[in-house]
Image 1 (tube, rainbow, N blue to C red):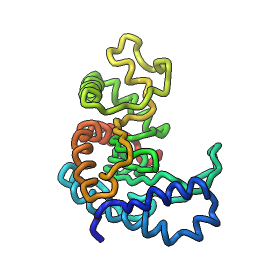
Image 2 (image 1 turned 90 degrees about the horizontal axis):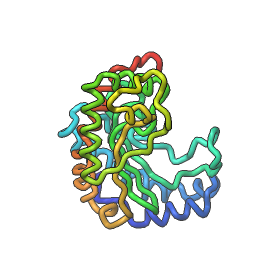
Image 3 (image 1 turned 30 degrees about the vertical axis):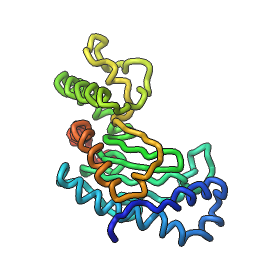
Length: 233
C-alpha cells in the first residue's frame, strides 16, 4: 500500500472519538479506524522508514502495533483521564537496542488540534536519566549538546521545559552547563496546525526535512543511550 496522505475523514473520526469515547462505540466503528487511521499509518511508516534509512541506516520502522504504531486504547491504570480511546495518532522510528520509548527516535503524531514532529527521547526512565546525567558530566558531551540545542532553537524548534528547578546534588554548582542537568527528557520538536500536508503524500518529504534538522540531536541522544545498562531496563 503506497502512502498518499491520511484521509481527510481521519480528523472527523478522531473528533467523533472525543465525543463518543467508549469501547462500545469504538468497536462498532473499528472498520473505520482500520481504513482511516491504521492502514494509512502503516503505509506512512513503511515509506517514511525507507526515507529515514538515508539518515540513519539502522533506524527501526515496523508497521505494526507495538512497533512503530501505538495501541488505540489508552493505558488508564495510572492516569487521571479515564477515557479509554486515544484521539491522537502517533508513530515512532527508533534506533538502538533499548525499548522503543527509551531509544533515540523520530516521532510524529496528529490530532484534530495539531501535527507534531520530534526527535530524541520524550521521557527518560530512571535508568536513562541516570545515564544522561553521567554523560553530561563530560564537558565535551555537554558542550556539544548545548551547541545542538542552541542551533535548533535558532531554527525555530522548541524544547521541553526542564522538569527540575534545582540542580541535582551530584553536580558541581560551578559546572558550565547547569541548565542541562534539570531535564528529564531530551528532544526538540515542531508543532503545526492541521493542514493539507497531512492529507498528501508530501507529508513524507515535509517530515524528512524536519528529521534531517533534528538528526544531530537524535544522534547525540543515541550515543548517550549506548551507555545505558540494558539489563536494568
